[in-house]
Image (cartoon, rainbow, N blue to C red):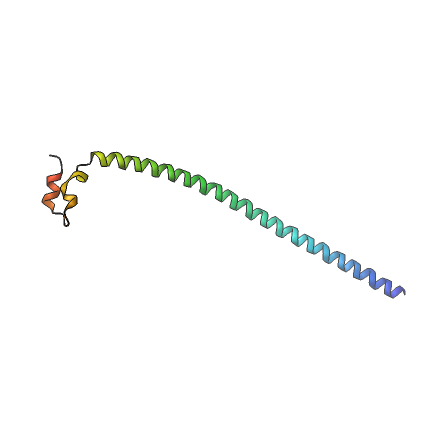
Length: 96
C-alpha cells in the first residue's frame, strides 16, 4: 500500500541520515586520533633529540672526570683508605 511505501521511504531516509551521522562521527574520531599521533611523534622526536644531547653531555663530563681523576691529589692520598677522615689528613693531601 501507499502508506507502507511511505513508511519504508521514511525508514530508509532515517537510516541514511543515521549512517551519515555515524560516518561523520567515525571520521572525527579518526581525525582526532591522527592529530594525537602526530603530536606524540613530535614529542618523541623532541625527546630523542634531548636524550642525544644529554648522552653527549654525559660522555663529555665522564671524560672530564677521568682527566681530573688523573691529576687530583685527593684521589691519590692515603686518606681515601682511612675509615674516618681527619681534617689534618686532608690538609696533608693538599698541595702547598
